[in-house]
Image (cartoon, rainbow, N blue to C red; front, side):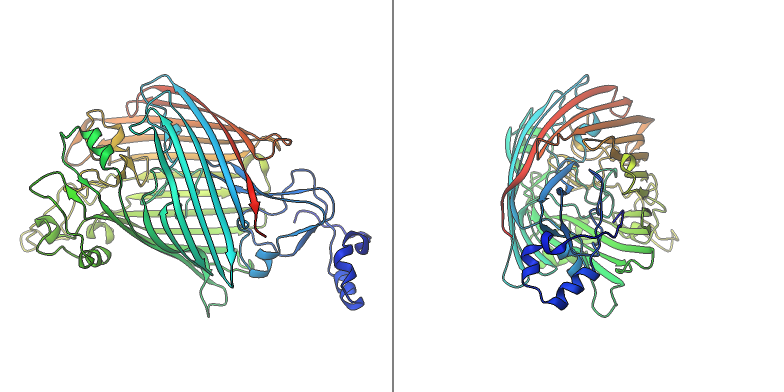
Amino acid sequence: MVKQQKEEVDLSASLSEVWRVLTDKEREILRSNSTIQHFKRNELIYCEGDEPKDMMCLLKGKVKIYKDGVGGRSQIIRMIKPVQYFGYRASFAQEEETTPEATTYKAEIFGSVASGDNAPFWMVSNRYGIVPLEANNGYLNAGVFHNQTFGKGFRWGAGLDVVAAVPRHRNFFIQQIYAELGYKCLLLSVGSKERYNSLWDRWLSSGDIVQSANARPIPEVNISIPEFTVVPLTKGWMQVKGDFAVGRSFDKDYLANFTNNKQTYVDNVLWHHKSLFVQIKDTRNDFPLSGVIGVQHWAQWGGTSTNPKIGKQPQSIKDLIRVICGSEGGGDATVSDQINVLGNHYGSYDFKLAFTQPNWQVSAYYQHFFEDKSGMIFVNNTDGLWGGQLDLPKFPWLRKVVVEYLVTRDQSGQFHFIDFDHDLHPGVGGGGDDYYNNGEYTTGASYFNRAIGSPLIPSPEYNENGSLGFKNNRVRDWHFGAEGAISSQVSYRVLVTVMNSWGRHATPFLSKKRGASGLLDISYQHPRLSGWEFTGSLAADAGSMFGDNFGFSLKVAKRGILKSWK
């Protein structure tokens, strides 16, 4: 709350329906524990992620409850009118305010033009693979989503999200289709859903190294604790979240068209990923310091190689256990997978430290990337994502600032010894980790040729010769992001990234590639057009990384509630 003012208010008139059923003692308790608070128009009462301390009742005016929606913009999910109550669920349950029980919808139309052959980098990246790479593109996007509780502690949800886009291999596709069943802190999800499991800011970060918002969602079965949940017997100081999933790629037709049968790849690839995050935080908010440590693991396995010498890969239940445990393949696996581990594996160690005050928060984080054992024991030195974030929730014109540094140059050294003689060569061996790439899984850590991890390691889509795999995986980049509100109706987002790439250890560039990419989003919401949002964007690239390019885009979006179930 921003302001507190005690004043004489006739609660019996303002809360007449409640007042009638109360005893005299209960009425006195209500009088003595009530505070009248005044807020200016468009002033924040509490922010997403805050824990409301009281049950609130609106006596006059109106309150909008909104959260970050698809595309990074604010989405109104509930309107509070006199005399209605809000904040009570989060306060009583000691949890964050969440999306209400409702059937919601979204509809978007997007179009862009650019001076180059491709759309500018930040006009395409971290948008769940919806925006086509080619310049002068557009799409129509519509979706319906449901969220409802039932019984004691149970909830269910479903979603359908379709896209029509040009130019594209398939102009029409299903982006999301899923069904979910939850019980208390657990959630079972089946299907394709745009998830974001990272600790880093969804709209301002350059992207999680393991799983960002850059590629289309992979259809999967996912069981998770999606939000930090208090561990019993820790007095509220320890919270955990995580997930476990198995999925399958459906980009076979796309890859056949992209390669024109001139390159080998594995189709119908199976995926496995899991994560665990442990947070130490005072849930009563009396202690300002908090920290998170986590680990993520992703793996490609199974499928059938178009190389007849490799053919169908092991994909039994026993093989799944091998992939989950990160152990070597059986006798039916390739020689490489029998020596190392079955499939293509990568992951990260995630660290975050935050200091929180009533009007601001500062955090620092590091995500250490690994491809194999050498990276897991930090032989690849400081490779990973370093970042810091400043949150100013009560400072409208500059609400968040993010600064990041991504470095992947080391990769445990240049060479890799498959048959390593420790007597002749002292040390840990390894090297040549070749991030995101794999000998058998030539598409690497991509889906529909978009990087599943950080877009700052350019996706195979950008390969000038049309080849598969990541050609620019040794990078050193600086990234800056900021967002805020110019007025109650106009908000903005700024992204600026400076990139340097040396190619791969095996195929280095003759000269370093440099580039700079930027984006400016301006969003407008008219007070009389509830749920409508208009976003104009300017984006540009410069340098040898993506060439010189300038583009403009316009998006019109409408979101709202079809039916509330509370």
